[in-house]
Image: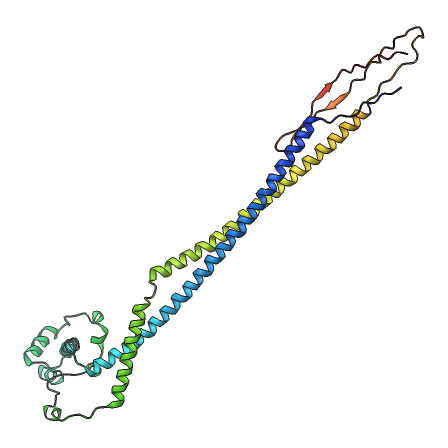
Length: 314
């Protein structure tokens, strides 16, 4: 006669499985949050990069406009320099005469020749020839560009060249030239107003924009390996937890099958006069206790349980 006891679930295995399921859920949530944060951060960096590129293009356009305006202003300034002899131009012409006289004296020309070539008083010519006869008293490499040009290219407004008789006659105005000067002047004024209303970015702003662009690109490149490593770590932990849960389920199933095979054997070779049936000695059953910690490790211990069976009367 065999008696079977219904198998019972081990509460430790159930608690271990619940703990593993909870940790798997937490890891899945963490992985989803990490993916969403990485996507949002990548999108923000791309948006900032596009904004910086637009700013750089606008700055380059402003620089081109400024260069064009500078060229126009220089042309207008040259036109007015030829037409209106103000004080600065007179000072430049006088300096050019001094430089020319010094070079002629250094080349060995006489005072009379120098006085005929330049429009300076004879006393100044003699003084310049005395000091610059053997060696020039100035450094030619340090002269400005306008002083290095030949005197013929400069506008001359010397008194000796003025014709007072013909100057009394009223000159006929050149309408084409005046119209061109007027249009150039209006264009220069308009360009100056536009530049004042929209000041161009400074060199420091361009450098800051370049620095920010480089830092954004480098941060994106450095962040991609970190994100990939986080994803790989989360996937590895998830695989380990799943494998541990499967091992626990297999162990629980094995324990249930072993418990169902436990049976009681009643001996038949005892004397008939004996009324009481003594229970057969129970076979010691080895059970394996499986405990799961947070990382899915397993430790096994062996125990021997004592089984007491009820008395059966014939």
